[in-house]
Image (cartoon, rainbow, N blue to C red):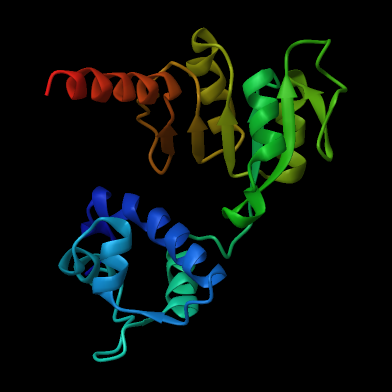
Length: 212
């Protein structure tokens, strides 16, 4: 099956498989059957086999899956064996928290630059990086060639800054603004993250639970 025909729901389950297999590996598991993995993840064995078959044959009949090998293959599918250079726009509380606490190196990325328009934030260190002025983005991108960007900037600035970054060669966005980027640029990827939406979904679940 070609990657272009793989459903988005399958792709979004891959990080969860990767995380669960990492926990299993840390707990000494060498192999696991689709049935056992399904029980741990709240899925069905058939669903797991169908998902994995989208990318090839990973298990052996009568043996199951080698946990380390399967996790490694999923990691390669997700591109976690690569180190894509990434920059961050917006060094406020959220931006600094992401820069300080996300393990980019084990998620397929390398954070190489942080930018902000606030002169009081420029020069502040976040981990190993120093916040730079947003006015230097073009020259930085020309010299360092980042491919991806994190947006932690005000909603009103999102569209303008996105176009600016695309012109600098950025091809993927991890977007934490309240602006849903709907881009017509070919080859540009956007992953919108709305933390408030997630919390609202939790509220809905509690509300409906009380009515049962």
